[in-house]
Image (tube, rainbow, N blue to C red):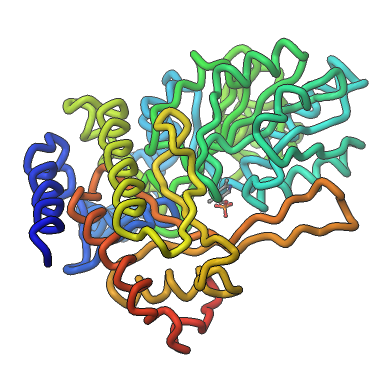
Length: 447
Ligand SMILES: *Cc1c(COP(=O)(O)O)cnc(C)c1O
């Protein structure tokens, strides 16, 4: 290592030593020697989970059996954990509930928004979103559009959103932080524009809850959903959440009218009467074991509250992603890497996305995947997101999206030295050409 690089790595170590949030990392089980930059896909395991699950299984289930629905508070978990998540996303107690998956919750809230607009403004038949939104969101929206006689209007560039919010628009549906680019939408400004145009807003917080400060009520969101297993560290397949603006929830109807969204589920009435508040967005029985793990995951974020909470986590997240961007620019120059994420701090979530210039040696098909695999081989876990070919004929405005190398930082446990080391591994993978080895081209079922 040259004196210069040592100096910079020392700087990263010094940044960690000065970081008041550094002790929060001790809450997690992090495999020795691994640099985990994929908390945006699956958060790491909180240390408290194993003991908590053992207790739920052996005591609450094993001994308490059916009595635990009351005595262990099982039935109240979706609201109790919902109240905790509400603190992270600028919502009040009793406004947010944990249930189902993000996809299912999106189905429920988007359906509620479309039903509301069908009553209030039947002429509005368009759902506006981004072409690069997460596919499940677009699939769900497409299905609901068919059901409601609406159509999806997808913009290629976020700058086209205000113009797309016209008199036909019923709902603006966005993921607050774009999964492919890490771009952070201005929720307050877009909600205001949507409302001025007569549209309702539906926000997916999959890459923002626990990653960036979110102010649902203050920023004028109408409906929101979010994911439990990414930045909330709730474990693989953790339940998701749903929120509806308090002024709207009383008249919102969601289509999955299951018994636990009923005003009096244990009255066993023949007809459905929705619960007065957000509880109506619950469909069936809560997944108690999964909720116990999610509860531990959410607590890892709440433990940052005495240290400045989401605002402090955001400052560290931006310092980490800024450092990642600058190190890549400085140390990986000449390899054709392009920054796909916004360079301006205010416009970036908690991830850095890179792509290769088509003309660079690594610009060939499959190279981005192989580079990510070579990094994983070195113990640096980021992920790869496949590009989308321009469709040409189907929609003349469709743009090609490049293959993406994605690196998520989680300020609860990512260190500055992790960022430094990750970029050094990236530099070595590129200068050595080791990514060209055949073993790095093999694809698993999950990428
Ligand atoms: C991760 C993610 C999801 C996941 O949905 P599931 O129903 O949990 O599979 C949905 N939307 C977005 C934007 C995501 O990033």
